[in-house]
Length: 419
Image 1 (tube, rainbow, N blue to C red):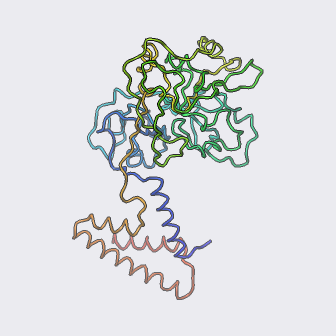
Image 2: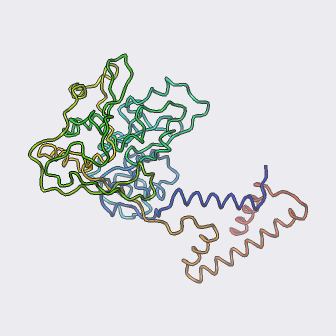
């Protein structure tokens, strides 16, 4: 199969455009100097050390290595330029001490979810949801939202879904997230954030509210019955379900968060909590659900006989609905991300993103010293003239230029240059 020069040039321009959309940021600076951040972290499977890389180092330093994207991790500092990683960092030349404050959970062993399975983008069919608290990833089937894939009718060529962040998920992508599988019991459009059972047990205020309106969980009557949703009672938008008497915002409609390109149902919310005159003395939290609380008494959950998973799916504006009595607020303050949404670091925008190859070439020339730029232009013109002479016989004889012909030309050019 052959293609014309115009078709080839067009295909290359399309590749450049797609690359600009996929990687719109600059990746020329390691984030180590910025200190601990909530940032996208990558695990290098090629390097023997179970450490994390920032986005820039994953591209600039470990380009040809096998990697797994772990997505956002809070209070994380890049390990690439430290003594913990033997591989040389191309962006931060000075070797730094090991990051003592970084937390390395099972994700850094390429293990995820409560099942501890490894993640392989080529074979994974299920959507995975990130816990807001521990930031581990969980399969929908392990949260009892669907039957396990092996129990479903497989597709002939399953489409590989990406890991999906339960906090900032694209609704359209989530609806068809697990290829060939039935829709989950709770879809991404139904909730804002997910907290796994193990983390719920550590947060007393959250534990008491699981299964109440706005804090959805899944339950069943007995081990032979199907899983159903609990906590779907209507919650008036922007009206607190349980809030302290000291909150002056009672009865006031909060302004909607600005839309910044994300889908409206899952746009980023950066509104801070309303100020209060102090914590209330009386707890106004909703009554706890007995079935859910009984499920938490089991030290180790038997998934075959459990009547409640204990995982919770918090709906929109959950941060504005907390009770702020002395007891509830102290439990929440130990986990600041429950009170205020966290920012995620993003590298600066790349001004060259989306430019054509010609434009990129001209920018590169502009950045060179004048004498080197002139030498580069002369060398390019010399190569162009040789290429024209090489291709002229093909044009005169009406022959198609194949890949082998192009390779032969550049091999001859290398031999001439090295002679």
